[in-house]
Length: 159
Image 1: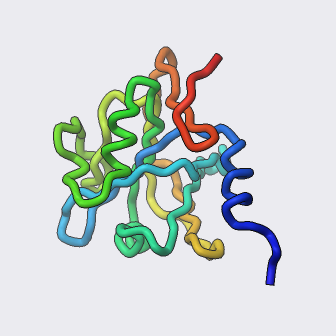
Image 2: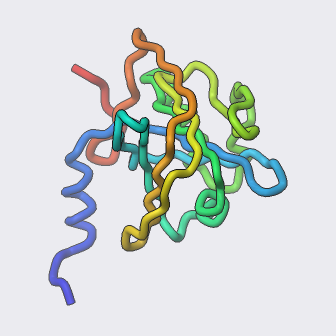
Image 3: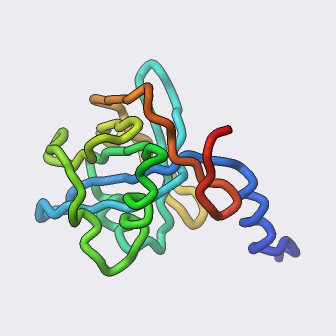
């Protein structure tokens, strides 16, 4: 039994500034599914691989864990409202959100800092999360756009 305080541990992890992403896919019936996440990371340039992780308790866990394709969107500093919308439970997260159809029909959000359309490469156990590694099939970026940053439990801006 660990004597580490889990809230103190979470707060310590929050000292690491991250970008903010929205991950999207479709369920087996073709319905759009999406959520906000900050667990994104690059893995490899050759082949082009990225990863993110999802809590096993997340509402959309089964959908993402079974999905063969997903898109990762790095939000711009002007997209805090999109981050909040995709983090809110019990609403249509895609309401008033412009999307295009990506590979295998996945929704790709418009006007993000960057987006990566992926097919699943691997799934790994990660404690109370599953780590999803995606092989990038296509990507887009807007170099001039500043990223949305999250630090210590709140949004932040680049200096």
